[in-house]
Each structure stands twice: as C-alpha cells, then as structure tokens.
Length: 180
Image 1 (tube, rainbow, N blue to C red):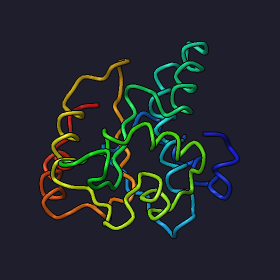
Image 2: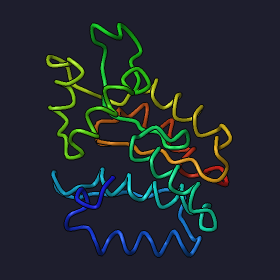
Image 3: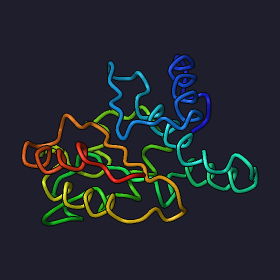
C-alpha cells in the first residue's frame, strides 16, 4: 500500500514499526475506529512490516515481498471478509471464493465500505457475514507452515459481521496461537 493510503496514520504506523523492529509482537491486534479512518490500509501496512521484517539484510527480497503485498498476492498474507451465497457461490460461501474480487476492490479503493463490497460481489439483497465455514478455513490456513518462512498474517475485515458460532470457533486459535 502506498503512503497516500495512510493519511493521518503516521503516529500509529511509527508505533507498529517500533513493535515490529523490536521483535516483540503480540499474536493478535485489533484496529478499531470510525468508518473511513483507514484501518484496512493500516492493517495491510502492518502486515507488510511483519512479513518483510525477515528481509532486513536482503533488500532485493524485501522489494519482492513488498510488491506481493502491494498486489495482495503474498502467500503468507490472508484476508477474511463478509460474504454470502450468490450466483457465483451457491452454498458455504467463504472469502476464498471471492479473492480476485477482493484484491481488485481493495487495490481500487482501500476505503471501501461494506455495502460497496457486497455490491461488487453482487450480494445486494443479503447481509454479508463471516460464518463458521470461514472459521474452519482460518483454522486450516493458520495451522499451515508459512510459505516463505517467518510469519503468517490473517487480516479479518469487518469482524463485527462474524456470527457467534464463528467467533466461538476462533476463540481457541486466538487464545492459543501457534508460534508464528
């Protein structure tokens, strides 16, 4: 994500840079604030700081990792966001079914609203949610070894749309995370 998407977040980014460079990262972070504050852009920037921290001595590899993050294609950067069944996905919809649309939407507008997102994936008469099927995908993804070595990062956008069953299933993962 370019710096232009981080307007008004310099102090927070400096704090996150400090945490990352110290190597003292918590296993989870919650970013909250008003709509339009740039929480998603900050989360992606924080993911970049975390995923690129292992390349301090190799600028070329760091640039490659940054390019993957900027295109939202880094294999250790994962996203979860509200979805629902649609003409594309008839049952058990999860974020993985809408990855291409997500990348396109976020690159185009990192300040996208939930209603804009649902319109983009042609879900206009249903509520977007993060279901228990998603929790199973998160658990599976986060239990795998990092593709590029180091950390795996999961960004959950609009977590307030997570249903209770999903939240309960994720509680164990959040309370007892793997090492990286």
